[in-house]
Amino acid sequence: MLLGLVALLLAPATPFLPVLAPAAEALVLLVPVFAACTLVGWWAGGRLSVALLWLLLAAWLVAQPIPGTAGYGWLVRGWAVLLAGVFGAFCVLRPRQGFLAQALPAVGLSMLIALVALFTVNGSAADQLGRTLLIEYADRTNQWTVLLNRLTSTPEWAEYLAKSPEALALRQQVLAEYGRMPERSLTVLPAMLALESLAVLAVAWALFQRLSRVRIGPPLAPLQEFRFSDQLIWALVVGVTMLVLPAFAEMRDAAINLLVFFGALYVVRGLGVLSWMLAPRRWTKALLVAVGLLAWQLLATLALALGVGDTWLDWRRRTRPTS
Image (cartoon, rainbow, N blue to C red; front, side, top):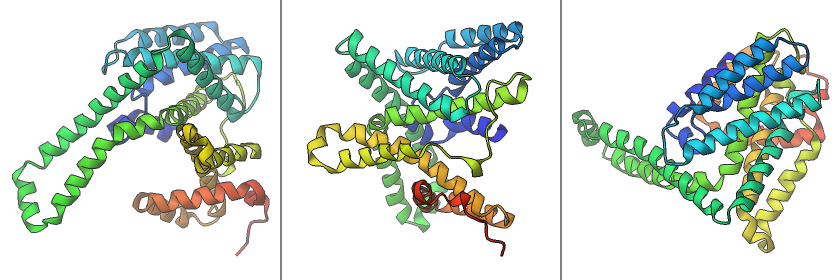
């Protein structure tokens, strides 16, 4: 739980994540969701004073100015309040359910409400939202580009470049990738926002279960037990179909977002399978972490294959080998 909280709060310090994550201010999302959990806890028999305290803290935090492009702060605030409200409503109306049973429909309904509001309130709202986020992403990327240019303008860099001329081509490649990041990030905005929101909900759920005596549902299970309904495999099937068939060319962005979101879920499920397989051999977990740091693409591909395969093979219900 603590590692997840630290990772969530420090993610904006990573060069690419501020562009990939739509809401760089994770705390603005986390505190309202935690406040919603305390309100649900009061409904389940907890203390009203605790819920009111966190609600006041969430209201104060949401009211604070958020740096960034004009309009971006209101988008983050609106999503934080919407997500917290829908998640809290699900927890009240469907008490004692597991985390994913509450979080997945809450994120989905929040996205649906946001899309309906976006396309019904104002016809040009979608274009304005796209321009706002594109400018915001470009500003974030520019900050890291300036930092990179500053680091590569030092005498130490010139000395290193004299010894390794190929470093100049690498620098140009990195700058080119940074330049393409805003438009690419805007394409997968819904999927990345949904994944970030799911992570925020998980951290808030775990924090509440750790700090409160009242239970609003079962605690989060270990990674090796992570699973969800096998019926979600159809989301991947629909995404691949829409991406491959020319008849759905106009829905390519929707297909990409389906594949990114549900693909990420299956990667985590595959990591759970790997964690189960390696449970008796602790030294192999350290090896797994090392492989993830050095070759994360390979690990993600393997985890995706295991996660999708788990739909039919159900690896963790098989007898664990004893040797």
